[in-house]
Amino acid sequence: MQKFVLNGEFIHLIQLLKAMNWVEHGAMAQHVVEEGMVQYNGVVDYRKRLKVKRGDKVEFEGQVVEIV
Image (tube, rainbow, N blue to C red; front, side):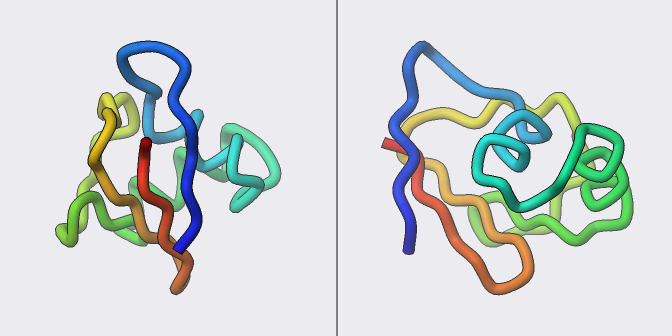
């Protein structure tokens, strides 16, 4: 499991996907979220503007990141 250090209160889900280099660009990030390919705290979530905060876990294609 990877860790992502949050500088601030939250990061939007699509921004996190780009920051982790799991997608190449923002349009791809939006697409994978819309297609239900991303799990937020163990549940598929379709919200692109979801505010991910400390303690949350995001999973995409077998990769997991914990927000710290």
